[in-house]
Length: 342
Image 1 (cartoon, rainbow, N blue to C red):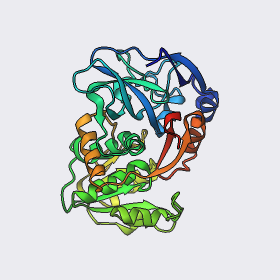
Image 2 (cartoon, rainbow, N blue to C red; image 1 turned 90 degrees about the vertical axis):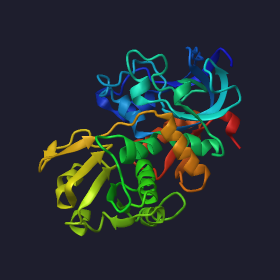
Image 3 (cartoon, rainbow, N blue to C red; image 1 turned 60 degrees about the vertical axis):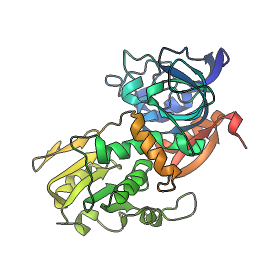
């Protein structure tokens, strides 16, 4: 690897918490390639993906919990090729992907990051990096953060996340990146899955309603019907909230089973925090390689789809970040690096 690389850098948080101001202020700069610590690998980045948390950090509002001292290189989802290793498992030339980890890289005692995907090279602990196997590099970069959020939220994370065959699961925000993974994963476990979507179009031209139906859900057009009336008394075991609308939380008692749970990945300030003795549980994803490997196996076997909205060149990262904050995407917003341009 060379000594220096191009990387997008944020030098200060958006004025007044403005995400767009921070996006506009990002600079593409020549900086030192990260130095490896023991147990880490250096990845030549070929694809990266945008996530809502990227711009959430730009507001400065999460500094107490997830410090990202400026200047720093944003981005958490990455795929590429190992070009140097100080670990035991991975070797130069391996095609890999990783979720760089909000909890793992954005903290005071970290030895890598914070974040770091929007650069030509990034360092990551070998333990968090998965081999892509048969999965194409673009899909491998689109999968980690959103796929892991759905997988852990449904099965391994949260207070007691377990979805069993025959369970009723409602995914709020089915066409979101996390929602699309959640529908497929819950349906594959044999759950009865419901979701919310609109008639708006996917990049393919397919309606979001049809898209979610194909993934395995019964779909309610939230612009025309109220899911909490349609599912009233249905004894839903789990509501997995990917939309973050507080009204959804307030309506949830109408449909939840006794002991049913409301798990959210997007409502950080539920009002009220408890309803009818039930907490609104906020869930944060962790970078766990074995979970990512399980997801990659399902994608490689053709059992699991990874929806992609669009690709932009690395030099146009700001276009994708702006699209992200407008909520205009259906599937992952991807960034491709010069080597991978067709």
